[in-house]
Structure formats: structure tokens, C-alpha cells
Amino acid sequence: MNKAVYPGSFDPTTNGHLDIIKRASGFIDSLVVGVLENPSKNSLFSIRERVEHIKLLTEDLINVEVMPFSGLLCDFVKKVDAKLVIRGLRAVTDFEYEFQMALTNRSLNENIETLFIPTSTQFLYLSSSVVKEVAMFGGDISGMVPEVLKNIIVDKFKEISRKK
Ligand code: PNS
Image (cartoon, rainbow, N blue to C red; front, side, top):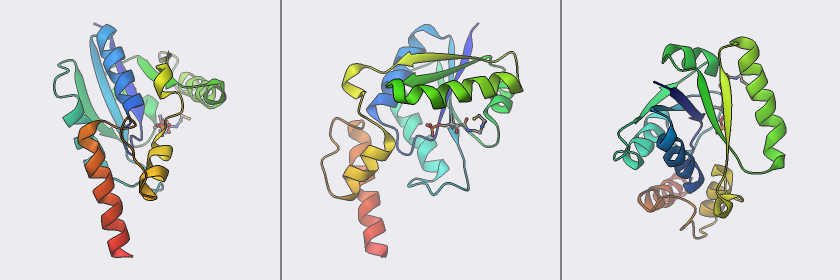
């Protein structure tokens, strides 16, 4: 059985992320979506919220599970007994960072391979940061994020601006 980890911050999950999850789950026997808990990063959604979002979005994908992780990715990959890391590649600009990350993970654990999946063309421009920027200024994020997350994101920014 081949098992892979698709890691990320998913703050929030975009249609680009979901596309990679669906495509990877089509050829991987068991896919673990690893959501990074990074206390030093000021995330919009808590780790619990981000995990919940992906669980909601993948409830019909029987070979996908969602787990939070902290610390090194290579340790998490080992913990879940996987050997493969999946990453989506949008453009050449992603490549240097992704290549460095793949080589670092392999230097930390030589059994780990990274598989890059090219993003579907309609999501080439998309990132969690773009979604946050557009939503923060009241722009329309339809088409950027799954429909069920749209209002959750809009409401989060409303909540933040109320607190200010
Ligand atoms: O979606 P992102 O934010 O680009 O995902 C980045 C992620 C979570 C894959 C990366 O930051 C990560 O693996 N962090 C865990 C720490 C780690 O293992 N670092 C060494 C590899 S550079």
C-alpha cells in the first residue's frame, strides 16, 4: 500500500489545495493531509479550525485523513508510516523553495521522496495569501475557495474588524 502526506498550512484551504488532494487521492492508496501547527506564524484560522475545514471538504474521500502536526515534516511522515510527500507546484517561482524543502527532508530522512503535482491551470494564480488579501478588503473570493468555506472566511474577517 502506498501512503503519502500532503502537508501545508492551509490557512485557508483554497480550490488549488483541494484540487491537489482530489488528484492525489486518485492514485495514492492512503493520503494524510498534514496541517502544520506553527505557533510562530500568525494564522487566520486556528489549527483546530483548519483541520475541521479540510475534514469537511474531504468527507466523501474515503482514503483521505486529516491530521495536525508540529515540528519537522520528516518526523510526521515517519510517524504516520508514509514515505512520500506530495506538493503542488504552481509556477517556476515555487520551484526553488520546494526543491530546497524536498532536499532538506531527504537529507533528514533518506527514505522520504517528494512528488510534485502541477497545479491545474485555473488555479495557477491562487494562494492562501491571495485569498486573505482579497477577502480582507471585501473582494469576491468565489472560485478561489470551496463554496462552504467562503462565508466562514468572510465572517472571520468581519469578526476581526469588529474586535479592532
Ligand atoms: O503550505 P505551506 O505553508 O507552503 O507549507 C509549508 C510546509 C508546512 C510544508 C513546511 O513549512 C513544513 O514542512 N514545515 C515543517 C517544518 C519542517 O519540516 N521544515 C524542514 C523542511 S524545510
